[in-house]
Image 1 (cartoon, helix red, strand yellow):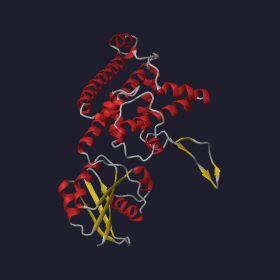
Image 2 (cartoon, helix red, strand yellow):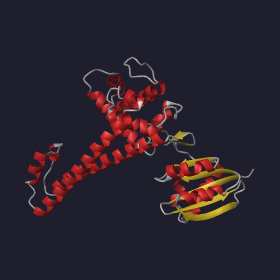
Image 3 (cartoon, helix red, strand yellow):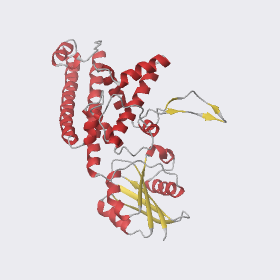
Image 4 (cartoon, helix red, strand yellow):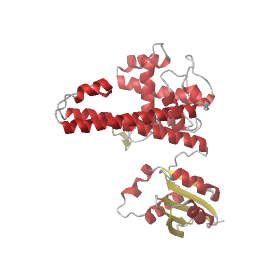
Length: 345
């Protein structure tokens, strides 16, 4: 049976597919309009052992679901790991598809995790929409303060966003036109926060049927949103064979660079990889655990790490790593949080 390596470029309007054999010879080179019917027609026409490679994008999960029953394997990779495709001066849909096929044939593909659970996928999409709304609200808050600063008004704290605070600060803006523009920003902020509140209610209703979310909420510092984020983005507690791999995915791993056996830099946090939302989640849980009135293991670990290193950042990152390790362990072992959990692997 002929083994085919298929590169699939997916666009919102057009797709391009290139299929090659084990020697790199092109068997199929075709562009077509993006639709479920066209995807099925193309992949139903391929004969042999078919392996498909496409890059992660908004359409990737849908495309994977459509073609997976028609082929032997569908691999989705992160565009970041294929950066040479994006920066190549010779770039078009056909060339991109060919390069994706070549990478798959050479076994040089860094696959991203894709779930087959449609319910979990929908849950993740709702969490992603919540995060985008939260990000939008944060940006609007930053814009409000920036516009006030342009008028010589330095606003600090959260009072500037309250109803009484708005009246006070807007009253100090001399230009009527600028005042109206800032008022519009406030209106946009209100709309974003209202939508965020609605999304929170939707998340709560979706989370009620998820035992994993309830268990994670028993951890000090973990609230609804943090628990939902961890479940949505990790998706499977058995996905990572070790806590170190989970730390890397959460953006909490340390990178070591060397050449000719000699270190090039001191070990430092790897800021180029991982899921930034999970990293932010672990920091929010850390802050919540530190504020908790009842003593907990994360507070004790932080004070112990501070005594050892005398560096607040190092101590905080140590606690953040412990937090994600604990969340993974509780989910994996189907247990509630206990203060005397001991060492977590």
